[in-house]
Length: 158
Image (cartoon, rainbow, N blue to C red; front, side, top):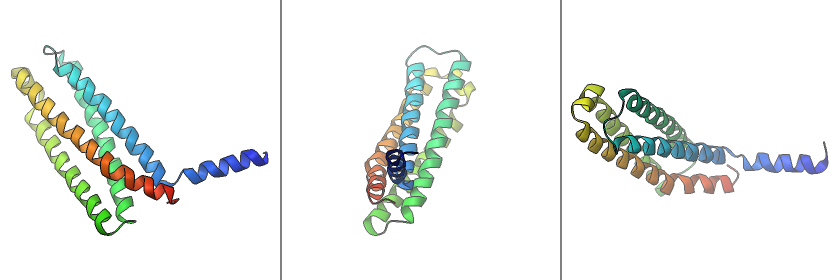
């Protein structure tokens, strides 16, 4: 292996800090969740769809949300073990907001089984829009506060 290739490989590893990896993974989870939310938004802006299409859309958004939540928990733990003071309090506030978001999502799913959706399509569309707005706001919160913290740690090689 040439010296240039070894040097490039070493530089790449230095840029692959745990904080950088978590940032990339969380960003990807956010992007995927937004895609799934947009899909459900498309479905709920039309006439009542085939139940299989809506079920698939809801399942995809649920899986993307689970992935985001899991990564967020890893990020919260990672940051909590490396920060203090105001930064640590900020992480804890984001973590509490994440728990609130999880409760809202669980309540939404519980209130809207397929039978209820079929009985009240317009009501479901409004409720779906509302929960997706909360989810988007939470993604923006994580981007606003967690991304800079992860970027700062990555710049320090952590």
